[in-house]
Image 1 (cartoon, rainbow, N blue to C red):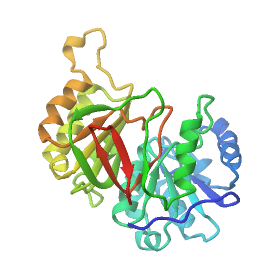
Image 2: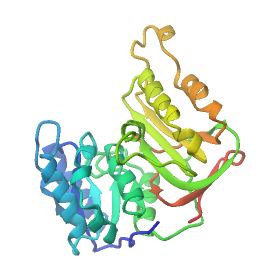
Image 3: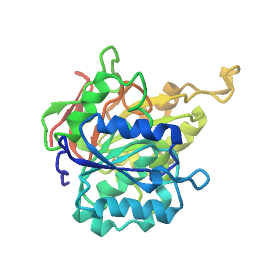
Image 4: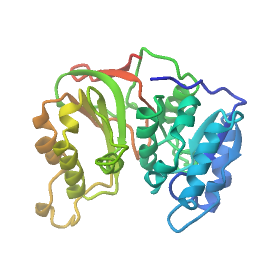
Length: 310
């Protein structure tokens, strides 16, 4: 797995949306947030376009991803937001060209579809991170989140460091043990929707990270069941569970008609016997850590430590 060149102040960042449109009122603030980090900004056309629930038609969004990688003046690419639509452009990407031009590529949520492809088919590390038109511009964007993000994208080659939760946010052991492998995954919905496609996630011998937002508990159950029956948990060396924001029962007034998320995890994940740490501060949450997808990590449930080792 290749590691893209570290970013430095003065580098040029391409802002894109491979998914949903950016609210117009957020765009100037998103640009400023990146400039305030010391970067120059090239704003992609997709940051200004709308095609229903998409940031422009598929061809536009795919071509922009291709051009941001092809352009030697672009040093890194930040997805301005998630939403929906990244999976639609995968067949239109020039993966052979992208493979030859690895760059810092950052984002999360719907961007998971691109992380999987760039990790597996283009063989380079990408970064599961907060984004300019969502977290970057929030008043509650905190020092922990900034430091986690900047240390990853501005020192891409570092290893032998610990991925620590934010203060006051303890990890929880679901299945004890120790596991080592390449870190993969992201948003559960996108990971599950990759199954049966040419872009299906490969979890063999890897550490699978999962998080999600705004899903009923039975939807989480369905997607985890799908991954389990596809053998993805059996293949994995270990599992990390992040934030599950607003993932609750469909009818909160009748809790007896639902199952708690913990119960779902216990019934579907625990029987796999894989080491599992949960409550990782990563996902649709603040504070949130940035994850170097594609790097080799090891985690130990006894010490509740996650360490990047390669």
